[in-house]
Image (tube, rainbow, N blue to C red; front, side, top):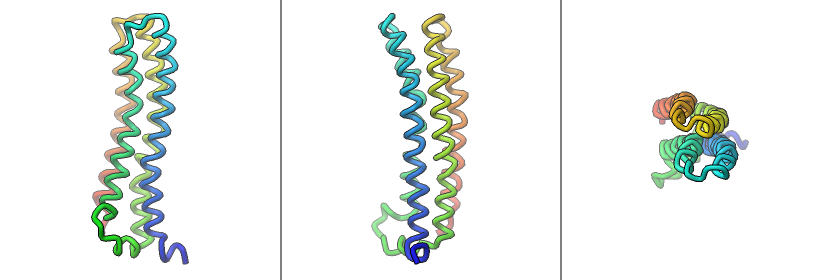
Length: 164
């Protein structure tokens, strides 16, 4: 009975919610990891704060990407349009489509943010030992970012192609 009445909408909202929450968790873990590494360096050399901050912020982008997918999904569902009557009639298959469309960002964002935080922490070590080479660490972080962007792109393209 539940799947017949609210199943489609519930599945769609679950997918959108996961797209927002999981990359946010990954970003919190990734920026925390980089921040821990940064505090050690800043206790020795506070003048490097700007560069440490840049390296710490980079793993936070996945949380932002997840929020973009969440917003785009709920907009595409019609939650922001004010016509809620059509939402309650959402078929289970369409709810599964939204759920599946949000998974690339949910999982890709979670795991890439954590990995990027580790790379950012290592890049802070580069900054500590060879300050002139800190941009090399940024390039390594951006390599991981590429996969978060691919996750964002995959989710967005799938949401766009869900038939109403």
